[in-house]
Image (cartoon, rainbow over all chains, first blue to last red; front, side):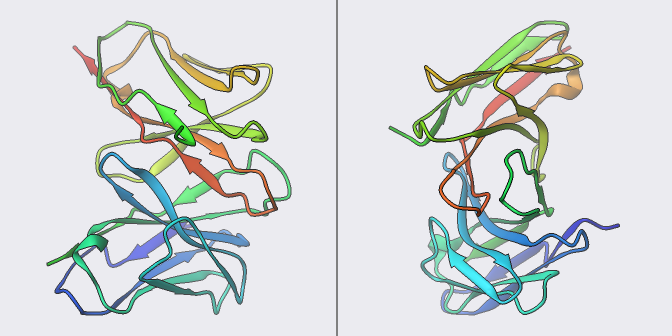
Amino acid sequence: NAGVTQTPKFRVLKTGQSMTLLCAQDMNHEYMYWYRQDPGMGLRLIHYSVGEGTTAKGEVPDGYNVSRLKKQNFLLGLESAAPSQTSVYFCASGTSGGTSYNEQFFGPGTRLTVL
Amino acid sequence: RKEVEQDPGPFNVPEGATVAFNCTYSNSASQSFFWYRQDCRKEPKLLMSVYSSGNEDGRFTAQLNRASQYISLLIRDSKLSDSATYLCVVNWEGGATNKLIFGTGTLLAVQP
């Protein structure tokens, strides 16, 4: 039971390049999330998904796209990377939001640098 | 006012000390509250949920004050292994999305 995994762990991009971050979970969770974490800012929600085939915008969605074609996978895409997207990206998954106190489980993170 | 606000620290305490962290939140409709722990360069992990009546888990005690909209975490008999950043987290009610709002974290450094 691997939990939440993310690939790659590290990546350096040049401005304007594109890339896709992959998140996979084996806990059969309906809900999946992408966050970015920057110094002094806390974790901020980029996009999230409440089920296979559905996605929604979070707090900071600009410059990112996502897809949830399979329940266990949540992809985050950067079409044209900018230095402002240098950050640590965390994926998380959790159970239905119908009840409170639902824990979110996080992946190990992807450290992205855009030059 | 920030949605979830914490003292960033750092809190430098000796082993065995008792330390308390406070956190305030702005959305009075919030119903669920958590403390997550994040080690350096690692992912956040749930430390404990915070219930209305307060709850305790070993050396850790969490309390919620809805009237003043603040949450606290008390750590007794600090260990070196408690050194980490502690994130105050609030479930932002308003639909079944389980969206969490994270504070920026409070850094704890326990000294030998």
